[in-house]
Image 1 (tube, rainbow, N blue to C red):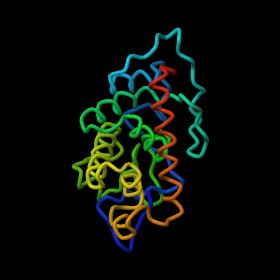
Image 2 (cartoon, helix red, strand yellow):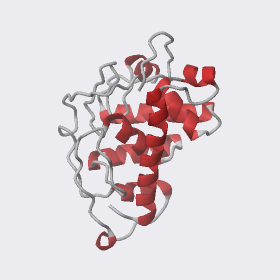
Image 3 (tube, one colour):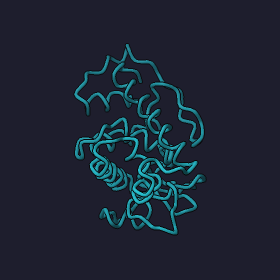
Length: 210
């Protein structure tokens, strides 16, 4: 997330571009499980996935935040249940949550940006505290809080996903000042990147691909 130091906003998470790893309750870097992320999305959205024989196997997770992701890519198995649970709890599209996580941390639970944003959904300390998070590097706490933040932003902007994502990246204050997506290069890239990732996960759920 963009770090707007001059005008702090409680909804700004401050993601940087060079996360580093730290140990967590999940295995280092998160190992890939065999359960397709599409199956979790199907469960969260009430759809019935195809059988294993009908599913294709995704390519391995590269761990590179800038690597393009193929259609139907799986999220690490450990994260799947966290996303599904938080999405159900807060009424947020699980594909959108997965898209934010992919864009923010590339599924690295120990990611810490130069600006200090932490974890899967890259929460700044002040934001995390405001959401009741005790440990922003705890994957379960991080995903619950980040999804709650998305829900709050969607409500704030009348369900406009593009504005909610812009506020997640640049802060609600910036979105309000500009009356839309701020003219920050990072935010201009961020919104379509998350939407594209979410569309891939949604398509995977609908098709039942792994």
